[in-house]
Length: 85
Image (cartoon, rainbow, N blue to C red; front, side, top):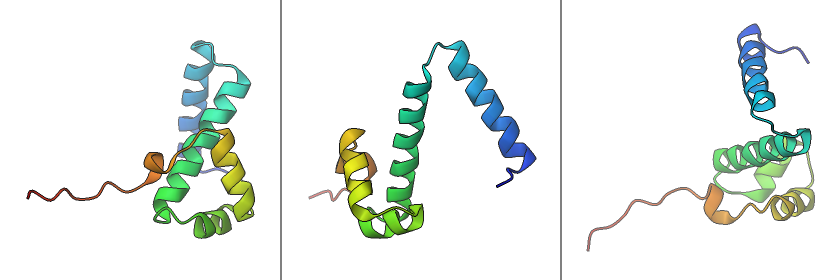
């Protein structure tokens, strides 16, 4: 899969900053996956089933990855409008 040139350039810049900052490959992969999963969950209203389908993984795999990356519901739940009572 080919990346658009702008995305490729942005990714190169980000990776360069992470390497310069001393991040290990494992840390970078885990943080990327964590942010990617959170974004997918937010995009699908927190639905594990729809998110897993969009990601091309089984729902149980997604649930296991959320646990291993310490992703909690509060990390991806939409912020509800506050009611002033």
